[in-house]
Structures are given as structure tokens and as C-alpha cells.
Image (cartoon, rainbow, N blue to C red):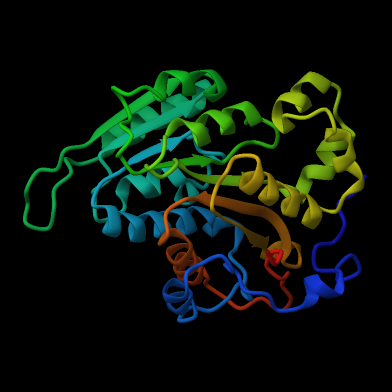
Length: 308
């Protein structure tokens, strides 16, 4: 089943076409901050998705002053375009206040690239030249298994601000892995933030070639996954957002479209962001706006939020 054009309005309900607030659950003072930034009416090109992530983490560490970064699929997805490599951009970003990095990768080429990247990094220092504490670990293997070794008190404390990027290749990340990440921190501490890329641009084509049903069950976490074949890319993204909120228990969830200018601004990804931190939504909107480089002639509306 081919993917439905995400720039079409044929499958939008009247409610979805209306202009709804991006973060209706925010407190008034935070909502007022968000209104300073433009909404998602512009495109982030595919090659800039890494810059989107880097920009958000840059803003967030200015609030937390520390943090742990987990990259579940850290190797470069395209060895010929390393300027769009998330792990490299995050390691090199300023200020260098992220203390711990867990870079996970399964492929040999990806591991070799990560090792070269880490070796090339200069000793981290602040603007005054003071040496900063930082530890970077490269963990080989399937992240769905490696995650159990990362989520331990000696490695990540309950108080440590933690971010997990999941730039998977279609069906790599198991739903049970998301559940482990979401449940690791206990109240009153904020959950591990999830930055989850959902590749809708080729999702329906991938569905048509499915032979391993067990793999799909692990990815989706529920036997109703065949129903996704009948849904539009947009509606799948809405459903994933709802599962982050209702199934994983995140207070603030949004799905940000990422476009490809070479394919008529077709939506290729949604970056689904789950966070419990009250300032995270405003910072994400700001990062999204900052990462935009050009105006698209036609773009998709942001995923609307149901009114509670």
C-alpha cells in the first residue's frame, strides 16, 4: 500500500483543519513564551533533522547545566553526508555541559565511524579554558538489549537530566525498549526525554514487504499492527503521539514533521518528542523555528492536539 500524500487535505477532519494550540496543556506563563516563536508552518529539510536535535539540546542544557545523552542508533545513516550526523553534531555542540554519552550501534561500519569520531574530539573546556568532566562510551550491539546495561543507577541517577535519541531504521526500536526508558525514572523525577524519529515517508512501502511478523510485533508492541496498513502516514503519527501520552505516560508530547524539499516537501519523518519537563515544549518550539532554513511552498499542518 502506497503512502498517501501528506500534503493532501482529503483525510483531514474539520477539527483537524482548525488552528489548535500546539501545547494546550501548558500553564499560561509557558504558553505565553511559546507565542514568541513561529508555529510549524515551515519545513525542516531532511538533512537538517540533526541540527534540530542539536539546537534543542543546546537550549535545554542551558536550563539543566548537565545531562546524559543516549543515542540508541548512533552510527551515521549516510557515510557520505556526515554533516547530518546527529552524534557528531551533539558531541561538538556548545556549551559542553552534557556529561555522559552512551552511543550504541550494531553495524561494524557504524562502530568504526563512532570510534573515529570520539578520537577526534578535543578535550572539553568551558569558555574560560577550564576542563569539563565528560565521559563518552561506545556500546556495540542491539540497543534493545544494550539498553538494560545503560539503565542502571551507577550509570544514570534519578536526578540526572537524560535525553534519548532514537533515529531508528524503520522497525529497529522495540516498543518494550520505549517502555523501559519511559519507566526508568521514578516520581518526583522527570522521565527520560524521548526524541523518536518515525519514518513515515517509506512506512507503507515497508509494510508491503513484511515477512517477519514477530519483528513487527516487537516494534509496535501490540498484535493490532496490521491495522496500520490501512491508515495514512498522518494518522499513524497521531496514534504514536497518543501512545506516548497514554501508554508511556508523558505529560507533553508533540510530533514535528520533517520534510524533503526534493520530493515536493513530502513529510519523510515525524520527530515525536515526549517529555515531563515543564520548559521542554517551549524550548522545542524554539529549536524547531531556529532549525528552519527556508520557506516551503506547501507544508503539512502540525498534528493537532485533542481538546481535553
